[in-house]
Length: 248
Image (cartoon, rainbow, N blue to C red; front, side, top):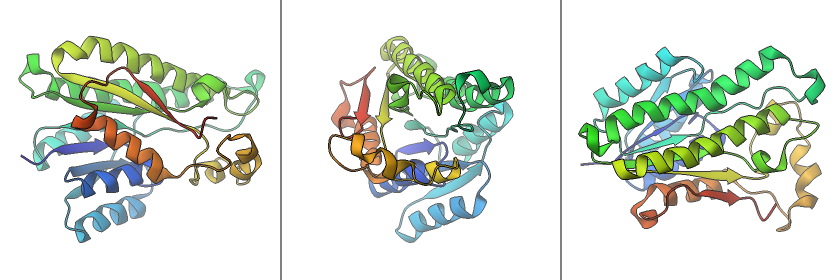
């Protein structure tokens, strides 16, 4: 049977790169998006033009009903899930810790922590060998901010990614006996429009000097790490948080 991958936040940036790379490796791909339907449709159409199978699904990761509906759509269109990539995430506005509001915290934690948690729960219901599944792989897209801290800009975002790292480790230990591997990639400074959307269009150029390799990474380079972790080539890798950061 054709392997099936669900990529949350798959309409742009790292998520779109993962969706395209997965399709090129033979996966049927479901990709969720929150607001930009046109971009999601274009990613899916590009995959289909190349001979693959893809469906875009509108789903807000802060809404449990949307997550349940997304997994149900995958079940109906493609069948049993093989791999889940928890990529969807938001930074929230830049803020120092003494100006972060409850509203900012609630939104960032709902999307970046609760969303992946619920997606893992739903994936386990379908993948776990003790629930009739064939096993599978989960890859969470974290951030080097989890260790660097995000001070002065995105401390709330960094804290949410630290929680995602903990979720990765705990889930790997709990789900290993049930046939599911769980890992994370931890991107560093990556050339996507995330920075511009957050109101910091010069951020990549400003911080590149602090990258030992001397350049930012690309979404495609992160996608390669994600696809390796999801593949049989990483069959004995679980609970890992893999930096994709040029040593930053």
